[in-house]
Image (cartoon, rainbow, N blue to C red; front, side):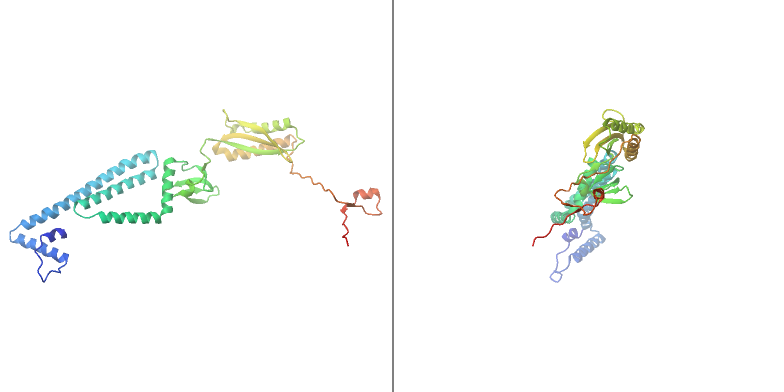
Length: 333
């Protein structure tokens, strides 16, 4: 308005050549009021055409742009919230709304004669500086979007990610919150989660329990297999049956101190830890009932090249029970 009034202002005199823009606008406004009092409405009509009408149209354009931005934000956010994730849907709606409003304001400003070139360059420089300053934060944000879109896990799953094992409590745009089995809250940056291997422990409905056990070399193979099979059969109510499921008793390998066996048992995922505990107990009880021992690690030590010293004046009968000590070598010289 000040610029428009300044166009109709009377020429500055020699004494008022340095008058400020504000004082010039005030004089122009005073001139319009004075002309209207005298019955001359030409200046008033010119001011209305040059200032009031463009200003009103600009306000109408901003209002229409606001309504359009709200409408488009709802159109984008609603299906994303319904089909993908509520957090991602709200973010998408705000992003669309702010983008449309920025374009509307810039368009209206350029229409009324405001130069937006320098303003756009300033925004670009500020955006670059902010992007460099928040590089890590933006990386977490981008990884959060990927986690929400591709959904490698969801809230309630038990995962092993970024070296932490826990139940997923919340998936945010910047961090993922996990609750550990000992009830600790761990907040992990999304870049650390997305940048490493993610193990979703509870993704499938069934899991396989594996119990390793070693028995003595003197134990009969057939009897051992029967005992382990009976242990697995005792937990049939916990077992998942079907193709590729059930249980399996496997002779694993011949170890240094024992014959090693493996019992594989399929069970529903929520019962995994309880079933593993019960299966281990059943294996121990059935092996004990069959008289099959679980040996301790054994190591045979052979001593070669030592001269044994036999005590003098000792009978042969006593010599066998005497302590045997290595003889010390005489040093030369």
